[in-house]
Length: 91
Image (tube, rainbow, N blue to C red; front, side):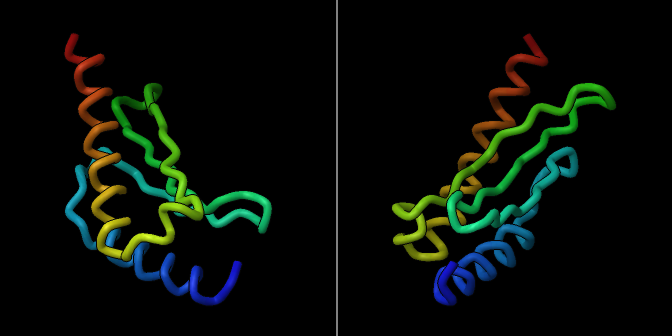
């Protein structure tokens, strides 16, 4: 991973961490080796045994956007994921 991408990812992580997200949402940042795209693993802790997850991939196309645009896309994806799980859980 080149230095520019790594710096951009660090800024993205800092901004996403500062966003007020539901306490039932856990966020894990993953920067695998060179062959895979970095991603954010979002876990919604519904209960002790029910913890659905979603990967938000940060592919090359997404990384061409500004840091703010990427953070907005991540935030929207997290909110959409939470809404999907809530609709299933609430029936």
